[in-house]
Amino acid sequence: MTTDARTAARLAESAGRLLLDVRAGELDPKALGTRGDTLSNRLLLDRLAADRPGDAVLSEESADSPSRLAAQRVWIIDPLDGTREFARPGRTDWAVHVALWEAGKGITAAAVAQPALGTVYASDDAVLAARRDGRLRILVSDSRPPVFAAAVAEELDAELVPMGSAGAKAMAVLRGEADAYVHAGGQWEWDSAAPVGVALAAGLHASRVDGTPLRYNEPHPYLPDLVICRPELAGRLLAALG
Image 1: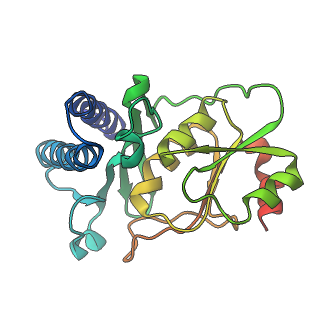
Image 2: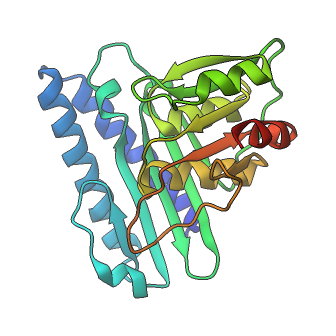
């Protein structure tokens, strides 16, 4: 049987191709985002039902079921992370997230596809690139940057860089294009499960902003804050965040 990580990568890539086809159509931005969310979700749910019929699913675009709390394996998916960016011509900072949570283990397989870049990052082959030279770069939401971001950047002599999708920001850190991604002010499990799974597999640090672990498949799947960064920066960044 195909490994869970390869299944995640294949599903994320397939949904990404579908989204590129949707994006090429003649739709207004609002309709484009809605259609992308709906069709990508349908594809992922259908494929998971066929490939992993005994597993539960938590998706941004489907009604939650309490039955997942008793499941041993739960796929946590965001069919289109960065719907707003997806609907804007020329934007590449949107993604597809597919992650597997297992009881007693946490996130055990994950993939993030960035279709507009033609890339898929998976937990079984993710590699942390060397950082670029120059000043520290901290990625933040371009719509809801943390209220403390400017103070943290000043303390670390870092540049704040706005970007869309959580997956896009996490993978930019993986590629060495930035040193950290910091978020506060609200997220859900599907926003971070796959990016965190890939990031941790590649050797990046990932935690809550207070340094505590990120926990998934919780009764209320809300994770308000997050930090992903290069391992050598984690101590300094968490101290500044504290």
